[in-house]
View 1 (spheres, rainbow, N blue to C red):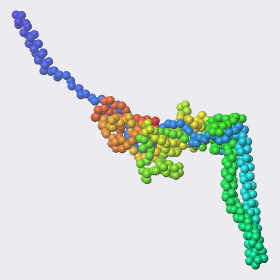
View 2: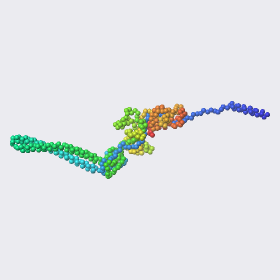
View 3: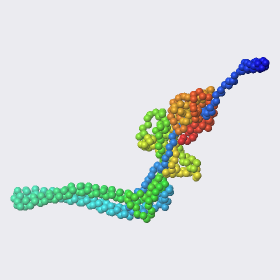
View 4: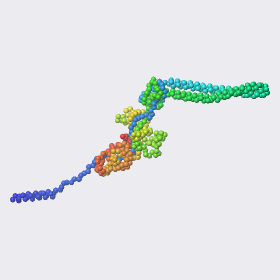
Length: 452
């Protein structure tokens, strides 16, 4: 009886289990969606590139002049404006040394000159007197000859004795000797005169030296300048060779900056035509040099958050640094003490530490990108499907924070400038154009922003 009661429940359970197994659909399958990685991009700009190199250096005057005392003596006159930092004009008196000693030396030499001139005049007078006396003695000699001839005839006629004839011959010989003595004197006079003339020339040379020395007692400024150092005061004694005053020119200031060979190569135009002979640059005008090299310069001074600027120019090349191999370049600023603006633009003074920006001739249009966008010679792009693509590029040259691309990039291609880790080719990206970064790279390439 109990077995019959269990049978209907068993049948019902089997029926429910069968129904549930037939109606089961299994777990629902869902499709996985790819997540896009946000990245910052810029469209690769093509611009006219200005080659730029930046260096630092100290301002120095174009010329420095030291007033050296060439004579010893007491300082008797002194420019009251002769103080460190003061300005003096060309021709202004600096100091004057007591001239008494130099004047005395000059007077002694002048006296010797007058004495020597008097000796020469006496010698000339002696010559004239000797020539006149010689003519008289030569006339007497002729008379003695005639007289001897006459007495020879008288002796032959027996009118006079042999002793009278001998006496007349002796008189003739004596007169001949007198004439020869005068001739000898005249022959010696030219050599004596030459000796006196040589001594006179030597004295005149000493006189010129003495006059120059006398002029050296007055020292004047050779050009418009600023007083750098004063080592003497009125009333003090100066010794020969002592540096009294040091002056710095104010017309031109110069800055020597060291530029690496890499950046210098970028600054020099490739299409110069004929090679430049550095030795012959001296014969070229400033305009010729600028025309060949095309270098321009800007000198900057940081002033507590403000930047003062001066227009500079390429002056000449300096020496190459043996340690770094960098090339020295002298940049000149004309009239550095003019157009001063208090609080904004001070005078460009000696020993100021300044920044110098050198600019070359504009290059042809080229694609530029940030240096940080290059990864071991490759650049990351965003394709039209917003996928990552890697390309190898050929670099023309580097400048500051940018790179000039020779090949491998087309204008306006989307260049990834943000750090992307990991960077997997084909990964989905969400690009966002960084306008600020684009503007910055364009300004740096075109020279609107200083290259650091």
